[in-house]
Image (cartoon, rainbow, N blue to C red; front, side, top):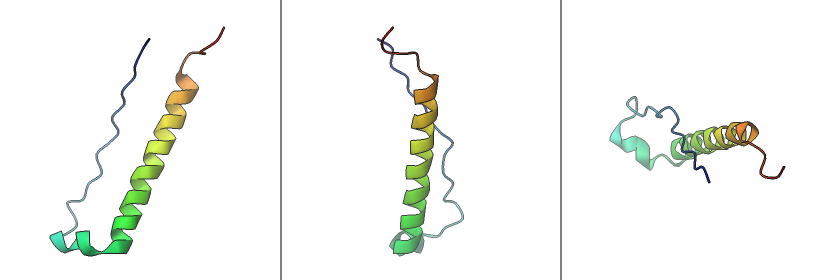
Length: 54
């Protein structure tokens, strides 16, 4: 069995101050961006994996 671990590019938050963590819309947008990136990465990995059954 092979296990594949993939790390994506880090999400830069250096442009935000500490108060940005209290902004619900900003947190929602960043969370949505991370979720969508993970979903696209998983889908790409799924297409590249070998078939489970012959």
